[in-house]
Image 1: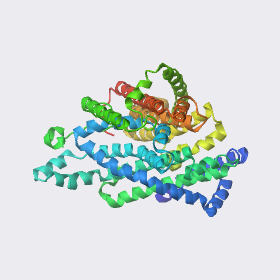
Image 2: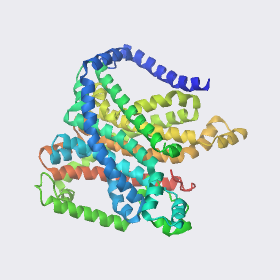
Image 3: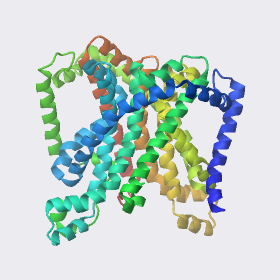
Image 4: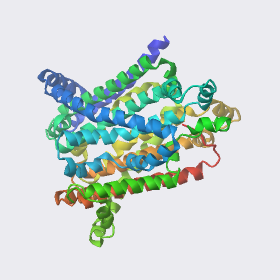
Length: 251
Length: 271
């Protein structure tokens, strides 16, 4: 009963949304708001045609360059900031400056620096994701229980042992949360950069936007939504597998 | 490693919030920024002014009356669109967030839907918003709204769900009406979340402001940037970026001040 209820309520929510959308879509017509029925048709068509998914996979593959760089650079910086007061003070002004500066504003400047190719898109993704990864890791590293460290020291653990056996397991969930938040920003940045220079999946959205029919446009948004949710879910499951001892703290 | 050295005194967990980021060891931070600017200045001497202008050239733009006379009116217009979009988002998200957070039924029904829509990158809505609202002011306001409304909503819902049921019950058993419970219990309890939503939302809205000016018909700061970039005046384009960064930092510190004022009664807690 409870399980059924738990599942049925969100479904009712979605159903209400889709019904309202369908009615509004029927009234407004495909040019303004394609109803779900015609989006579904177009969606199947786009799936069979294959171009949408091909563009998507190319874009995602290219996005991974910037995202992985952001993880490899951001996570150590975050840990260093959380564990050492000097590096905290050194990096802090940069992080707080960049985290409030929108990545979109950097694109015109970056185009002058890097051109409009892969280097631009990778650095936009990197710059969008890295600060959030740093901040999350920082919060994790800062919150490592001092009594655990004190205990380890009183059992004469070395610095390396403390790092490997206490700090790293404690911040594990934060690393995964950081990667999740970073990935959300990376996907946003990917779409934004691609829409700006009109290539890849973002470019496809831009060109589709010029059509009179919004069904294709909404289909592209739907795919983006599925990708974003799926990526989030995969990282969440990866976190549960890799660090099951901290599940409740990481959400 | 200062935790371990200072021993049991430091056992109490220090607050670890993003806002505490603004206050910290100022001197070291300043040194770090100066080193960074120095490295940039040195690096820039290796490149052409178009590719990488030195920080001194960017700074000089702020003393150039010709550039300032274009920058300041643009900034004013941009901030106006920001204020309208952000204000509308607050007007929609705060009541909606409280309703969703206070009603477990509605929360269960609509939370997954909201997360699903939230997962779509807002910039992807731009072509759609152009169809609906056109290329100008309305379109920009719509994008600013779209970019911050869900971030605000999520924080407010979390806040409204966080309100202690005990407090609500105590209020009810003393005969408080629904509006009294809302005004005297729920609102004070969610005020930290309101501040947090302002903080997150304003950053997102500023982001939306500049994104809109670049993606819709280029106007204001966005146009200033695009024109500067097209004229290979990189220093001016960077000066606009610096302006946006300063606006963002000022907004954050203003909200920080507000927080200290509004939440005087509340002990600092880590999020």
